[in-house]
Image (cartoon, rainbow, N blue to C red; front, side, top):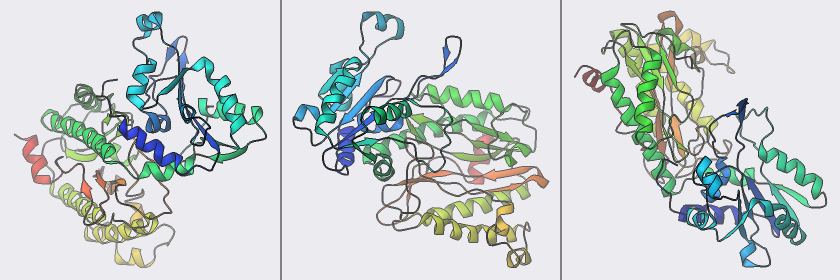
Length: 430
């Protein structure tokens, strides 16, 4: 891994939080992700399942975590199963976790090779009444492939039909959404790497540069700072491309006078940052661009202040919509009559700002979090309002990552990334 080793104390704490919520006499199992084939002998780069990483720190394929807090013997209460490594694997594939190294990473003392999994699980199931299965229940999830986790659940239900079934996901949604201080530090590191990439761009962007050249500059800066690269597929949208919310072609030339919407960010140690900035190709905003830009910035700043403990996500978006409505009237994009006659299910402001303002951030870019429950201190959210004007061939979005505080305004993890018009123009022309 490119990142520095994370102190195993984080994963010890995470497991304690999870097992504290388990039913008596129950077992929970978590699987690593598959390595997905492309064709022939090609595969996609491995990306670890975030749940097993959150609970163990293990960042390796063919790994399984078993938790059984009420097991009769202490050495059965936390067990890791790993693919057995040897000298041949080390030569062809590089270092894999040994049992000793796995303990250093995870804090788990009982480590078996994967071939012993079914034998050990069978013994654990003779003691247990309930099995926690790990299903993907994220509100944005669309899964069309059968994952390693899904295959295990199917097999387990056939093999142990007499046991009760419980779900891991509701527990994980709650505990993963509230970050430990170590996790906030890791997200901060991802944000700091993103800052380096963005500052690099400000001196690089000129008329006629291509979107993919900008992407390459970012990738260079991210990887040279111990990131695997982008936390999500980058959006580098010049001119009217910015009005396609998930534009990922990144293949057009950036023309003088246009704006570039950059929704780009680095990951670090599997933790995501999520930044959006909008910059002028020629290094200066026009008066109209500046007016729209500053309207978006005001909405972002006001929306940020609302992310406090007890806030409900749905009501928060209603309030942000009111602020955006006022700004759009000021820009002449909608009128008071439009607001008076609006459809409550699709308010007038939605014509120019059609997406949400905030989502949870962490190990996933759209991280775990139960949106119907009040916000809590140490949750991390994005704040990303935008105004999109196809008729004027530009769109502007600004996005920061903030930590909800017990008292006071949220802490901005992207506080050092330029966002004011004057600062961006100065840096682009220095």
